[in-house]
Image (cartoon, rainbow, N blue to C red):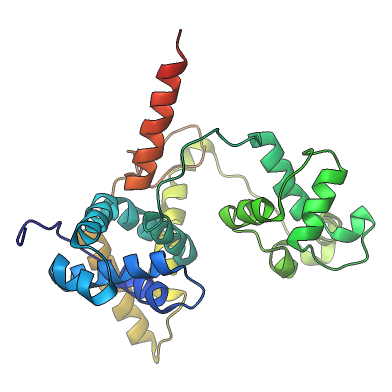
Length: 286
């Protein structure tokens, strides 16, 4: 009924991602339609009008409005703490169908870790005369090594995507232990390591803040003057404190701290998966 539809909110970055998904030729038709639903709902369109515009029943429009509303806090937390690529994947997950029921994945966490570790190795170490892995060649390699008895190329690609690994861009992530050691051992570089005491671990919190400021306000921006940069930083700090700020958890042990004491809110999909896993566990109790 009019007036009872879920209220939809979007940040500027989320809106940009939704527009890209809605017009992307590579996105599935369902995902594209759902992105259009959220954009229309953000503009306070009625479910009937959105449905007529994209060819869906108003009840379907209402369903995805509610799912976005249920996921909004989680998406805001991800936007605050993660990269734009991670946020886009989270938005796509929110707009995706719930996982199909059936048996759980057949690959253990150890097997998945070994697959990702193989992707981080130079192919020439495995006797392959290529400079980067393709999904098909990586699949063949992990089967040959006995990491898994069999696995589809698509599944390997899915694991790489979830881990944000791109083997063809090895220059960006591949490090040479030997060259790094030689560099550090060379006296000409005059490198001296100074280890701060454990009670200085509060500095980790400062690093977290600097990381947030860099990702959200500086990384993709350009400034015509030092004054413009200063203005941007001050405006962002005021905006962040008002909108996203959360207390950090500090521990004396010197271990890395997390930017939130409480767990990140869940999306509707994460809640669905969690409740289903709980149901399956209870059903297995004799």
